[in-house]
Structures are given as structure tokens and as C-alpha cells.
Length: 596
Image (tube, rainbow, N blue to C red; front, side, top):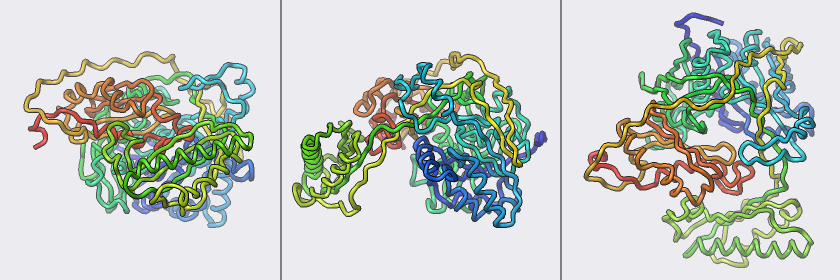
């Protein structure tokens, strides 16, 4: 730990999910620009996949690529350069992950101290929780009968403890994505659990880099302005003891770091930006400031924090039958209508076959005609008469055998019905378990995180500086829009950048005015009612708008927007990645002078 005010701690974000490119970690390590290398691997579905792997082999249950690909190729360099590694690759079996790294280190003749954070597994508490009327956070549903995994999102304090104890590599199970960064900063700068503004800034730093290249031009609205996608740089943050940090990327890499890019990533999946709930702090990002301080360098400051509440969020997973997705390509005139008729015929035929077998009907079905725009754009679709589409039929059923029958009835369409039917060459689709998420709250005092290091396991005494949830502090009244003349109608993308993501069945769409002075005019046009109307074919719940005047932005939280979200959704876009693009096509009025 260092308390030097002029010390800079450099952290590289190498992975945004299990399956991210293998180029991130080598690029960051060999740049010579980092002190810490952090990884995020765990989505909700990932935990259930890892649990299934552990059930077959007690030495599995972690993100194996972290060891067999990344650490195998980089461990010697990481140790020789003095880089410390923090990763949630431990999944549901962090101790096995640590053993695999230790074995790799021994094989390569490298000495390294490994710390393992334990205690996120809530499964032992499930029998007790069943008598407590636990309810799902979004739907209010009761706890399912059979749970596959249940893990609490731990915070940064256990990671700090591992680093304080001398760990060079820290392996965790489930923790909030930003904790791998915040834990390093708490260790380096000696930040305490009560320094909430600093914790908020550190959490924001982690949030910016937790999705890898999304902080360096990935998914940027102005995608054509982002150079050299194939060699895109992964993010490096230079962090200071007062909490401010600078976002950049290794020299000579592709990508783009600008206030617009970093702003889009800040808005990604944050919900209420005035009350972004984490185990260590409740963050207020509304007055965050971003400014360029050089080529591909953006300074970020201004996050505020207050005490967190007394609960951990727990993500449980459970199996709810099976699902299967079938696809065919339809070419020619009236392609969209031919594709829909094909899909409907498949469902009609298979339902009759189900009856003959004495099986129940599908639990759910969903038809999408990709290329027609009808699924994503609904009444705003422009290409309904397109001459090439992909028919996608997605179904759920309690019996795997029923979906195996469904899968056999996709390819026969190629010789039975519509002219121009093709594209079944990828093989017969396979039914898979339908794994759904169940999120709930659990009091922090009911879990006892532990640290395993040097062969021993010790309980961790965490500081729970909590307070009951209160109202989000009010912002000053927004400036009203000035009267404008000589107006023309344009798509929103001419005036704004945007990015979207998900939280369960909720879609989060962040919108940033391209010029700060345009924000009042955009607020006047992008009302909750108008956004809800534009997205009404997708969003069945409430739309709430939140203001972030610091980066001249708004965040729209759309409830019941993703057909259940994640694996519960039958849509081709279950995570709402396209929602921002759909909103950016909405027509708005703008003064002609702005478009010159």
C-alpha cells in the first residue's frame, strides 16, 4: 500500500465476459503500462454452466480459459513484470481454479502467491430461506423449488484483504464486476470503507473497464470513426489517490478513447444513475465530468458516494424446461410473408404431433423474421418487403423429447413449402436446458467471506458501513429549452450518441447530447411518454428518465422490455443490445443551423 498523493496506479481491463478475445491480456501485459490486470468472466448463465461442469468433475467449475489459455501463456511475464492479477474466473469453484494456477506455476518454475476469496455461495442457506417468503426482485415470484446456483455479489473488501496479505493473483467467485478494480485501489491508496466518494470513483473506474473494449470504441454509436477494429486496444486506467482517473489504451493499438465513448460506457446498464447500488457504496454518477486530456486520453472525476444498504444482491439460477431455436433462410419476392407462413406451419404441424404423443403444448413460442425489421422496429420497419430474410422460430417446452421432435421438423421445410427456402446447412438444432435467473436480497451479516492464502483459510472481518435506503438526492432544476426556429426533422442519431444493455427484464438506454447546449432541447423531445410510445412494441412496462447533466445525458430505464431477459427471453436480442439503435432512429426536430 502507498499513500503518496502523486502515485499513479495503472489497471488494465482484459476481459468483459467468458469468451472475450484472447488478445486483450497479452496486449496489456506487453504494453508495459499496467500494475494490475483485471478480468470479468461471470454472467448469470455462466454460473449455471460452471455448476454443471463441477457436478461432472469436482476439479472444474471455473473459467478454464483463464488458466489454460491466458495464464499459461503469460504467467512468467506477469510475475517478472510485477503485475498483480485479479479475476472472478473462480466461478463456482475458485479453490479449484487456484489449484490449477498453482500447478501451472510449478510446471513453469514460477513462484507466485495466490489468494482465494470464498463465501459468496448462498446454497447452504436455501433451506432456511424457503421459510422466509423470498421474492424475485423484478417479478415478485416465489423462490423456485430447485435451484442450480445461488451466489451473492460480494464487494471489494475481500479483494483488498487478499492484496493486503500479499497475494499476487487473487481469484474470486461471484463479486460485482467493478470490485476487481476497486479492491486494488483500496489496497494501493488505503481507502477506507467509509470514504464513500472515493469508493464511488473507484467503482466508476471499474465500471468503465469491466466490459473490455467497450471503453475503447467497441459498440460506439459513431462506429465509422473508430479505427482498426482488428487491433482494438483494451482499456488502461491511470488512477490517482484523490479518486480521479484517466482512461486510455496501449500505444499503437486501434480503437478510440473519447468523452463520447467513455460516456456511453458509463451509462451502460446503470439504472438510476443517482443510486447505482453496490455492496461497498451507493454511487451517484449524475455530476461526473469527462474531458479529453490528450489523444485517446479522457479524465474522469466527480462521482459521489453514500453508505450502501444492508443487503447483498443474490443471483440464483434454476432450470425451467428446455428451449430450442430453428432457423431457415427464405429468398425471393414476399420473403417475409413466406417466412412467417413457414414458421406458423412448423408450429402447427409439431403441435399436432405433440397431441399424438400425448405431450402438452409448447410453454412459449416466438417467431422473428430477421431482415424484415418487424421484430425490432415494429411499426417503424422500413424493409418489410425485403427479398431475403432469416426465419427464426424459438420455442420452450417442459419435455426435451418434444423439442427434439421440433428440431427434426425444421429442415423438411426446404422441400415442402416456400420457394427460395435454404440455409438449413448448419445442421439440426439441439434442445438445451432453459436456465433462468432469480435475483433477491440477502442481509450481509448472513454471509462470512473468507480468504484462503498460503494453505490456510481465515474469516474476513468486513466493515458494513450501511444505512437504510433513502431517496436519491435531488438535482437542480434542469434548464428549459429555448425557443427554436427554422426546424427540420432528423433522426435522433444526428443529435445524440446512445448505448443500451440489460438488467434482467429491464432495458437501459443511455443517451448523450452531441453538444452540451443541445441537452435541454433533447429533454423536451425525449419525454418518458414519447420514448415509451416509440418502443411500445417491445416495452410492456414503465419507462423512467434520469438526468446526468455532468455529461449532458439522459438514461432511460425500460421495464418488462426484454421478453423476460437473458435465457428467459425467446428474442434474438435478449440483452437489449439493439434498443439504443432503435431509439436513435426516432425522428426529432432540430434547428437547421445545428446540422450545418
